[in-house]
Length: 381
Image 1 (cartoon, helix red, strand yellow):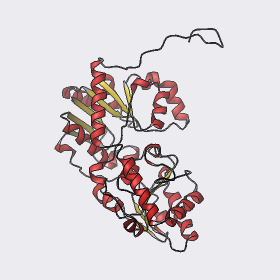
Image 2 (cartoon, helix red, strand yellow):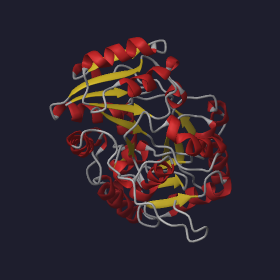
Image 3 (cartoon, one colour):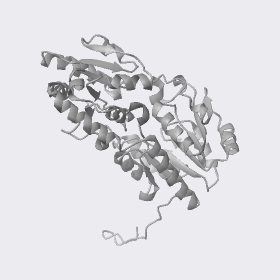
Image 4 (tube, one colour):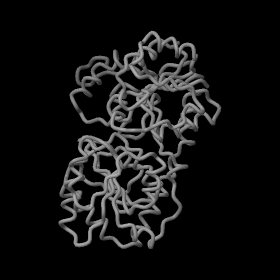
């Protein structure tokens, strides 16, 4: 197939997923901002360089938001069988492409947002017939929490493609980690942008409080950039590493004792999969989309109430107090749960889902149900 991907910036896990698609024999067109400075939202606080995507895909890296007519012409010239668009990109040109492709082209909205009953989400639900239905035939989601939101935007049960995010398991998967090795690490590792919704302030306050509660605290390594870096610079025991490439992060995960993700809102969190594949015990906020599939309370770590500094400090105390043997048990379970997902599996699943939609002639697969009588009003609905 020929697949066009309209995204909002490259990451390590996207590169791995697209590479897996290419290895299945698909031809890819990747349209993306050319640098973090021109990205929208999340990608603006990252520093991914050239990941080598152009080695297996045609890449159009824009520095200014592309004009609708030129992008429509480019994608039309590519003649795609399917087009995938990130749901949180505000480039009108992307939406123009989705509206312009022939009806037989499968159009997929990539979304990882969680339903929070925010005013904007209620507005989206009320207007999806005009804003969503005319650009997408299916929603590609990473978790049941995102699927709940997609269903509220009008996607039927057959119009949801599940399992949209996988870590680069070839890079992050670690061999078994024994008690002696894990017990010697004595460090927490946080990987994420240093911004409000990622809970950088919660991390700083909780770790400071944690050090007040224990006599022999673990250190805290922080990977990431962002405006909240100063909050962590003055905290004893914190080592700031700035942005690190995926291979460097994988190495640091193999040298840590526990992964922490204190986000107030984490739509999914591919980094949780990376940490689990690396054999790390996990502490994650309960507002993390990846938690249901990758973190089982009491088995490979614990969920922590989002934004609660005291609970985060207590969770760190709890983790640093367990025995090396318990850490090794947690590590084993993290690695086992991580095997549920992979870029190769993602590519196979997406291929099959696109092919069956193409075979159906495009459009949505969910058929309208029969009109039913409202028991309350006695009228057809």
